[in-house]
Length: 160
Length: 297
Image 1: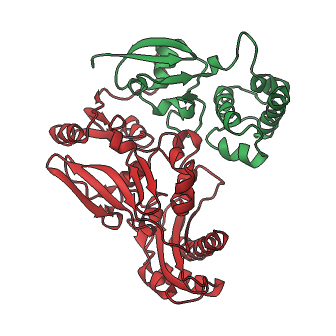
Image 2 (image 1 turned 180 degrees about the vertical axis):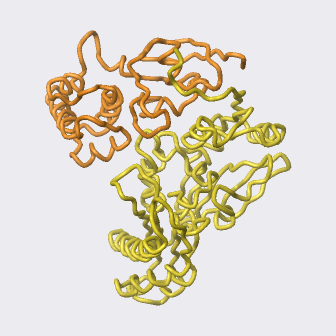
């Protein structure tokens, strides 16, 4: 077995240390070492976006990142989206808008949508669909997801 | 545990200078992979299309993460600079629109946060989205090896599907794109059967420079993707446009001429006939869009 490497990162605002083998993806370490099982494995090859996390603020597929690459990085997972025990407006709107059925794609959609709204607080439907083209949903047909993101954008804007 | 498909074991190094990276690459004797964004390499390693004892992460080498632009010297692009950084840099969007068109449609946002143009080039797929734009913008590859450095035009880089002229121990350090003259514009488009997230059935990039009156084409370059073993320049079609008026008729005629360099394969993505047809249509459309961008500038 390859020697393990010690990695220090910030995950959801907390300094986190872990040991990993070079071959382990960030997704494997999140789920199997750190018990952060909110990020899902869909395709494990960068097509579906179910494992989306923010790496230094940008959405990435955590299945296509080696955990050893994240030394010194800031990572936000779905577990870091709710604040002080309150659902983020995106999470609340997904619930109210029934934007999920099986739910496997949902963490990736919410993390990806948060990255979008952080940069573009009032996206058009086309911008939402274009920016979330890397997130696949096999249940909902996307319309409820898009509408829930629009609703969350409205609530976030009226709150500011 | 262990429901995930894991990679086979390898060592990982992240050197901070190019010579160390090139030396590690040479010393591994063909058993090493260079890791930039990882969006192709990690999939290839996981699916057994490639194997490695050593992965050399080049993202700690400052030169490989450059994005330097000046109107009089052009663009210097680190080989590992991610697509996202390219299309969010306004100067680059204005000066090299064909390259920016490609970086916006390579995978989705998650891929674009990591995937680099240098990696796309080194993967050397005939369908690579960023290569036709590099060709029409006359990009030059700057390579580093244990013995030193050399530079070659992108037009000499790809040699066959998945093959290129990198020698053992050599890696791509930077790409440079010359500065843009006045009255120049470019565009890249591909055909895919979906809206996003797919591999080009065929693609084209066009670059045109108009004279000061903007009524005649001073210079033009057209490149096609996914219709030959490597992305390819359509020289005759490009030459045809010189001195002509920038009209739909001339763009259409250039499209017909560009089809002559298409020698595509039949596969699940498209037939030979369809790909040749697409090469003409996409040439015409990208010329029209490049022209429109000059008019709008």
